[in-house]
Length: 110
Image 1 (cartoon, helix red, strand yellow):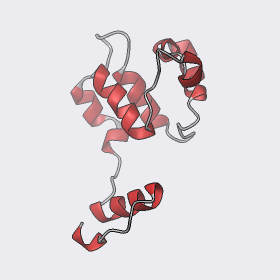
Image 2: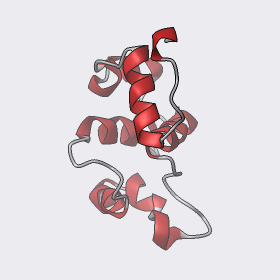
Image 3: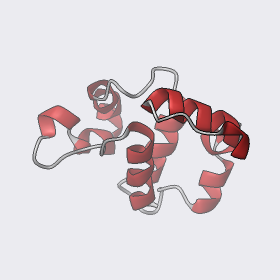
């Protein structure tokens, strides 16, 4: 679950949540691991949207330092972020094309 949380963060934001060789640029991961410094961790990551509280909660719960309180697959599947609506294939292709300036594609084949 912990590793899946790290991968989920990277998939969402395009970077790892921390970098051992450059803690000042990507944030100190131990901030996220402690409840009192969690907001400081997110402030270091400007790509994390302000209104993305559900994702932040899910990610924090997946990488909980205590394996006994860390989310299970069952809890992940019930989490609001996981259960939120998703894009249809056509919508996602258009978003990805526009966001990443991908060459035009035949949307009708989606």
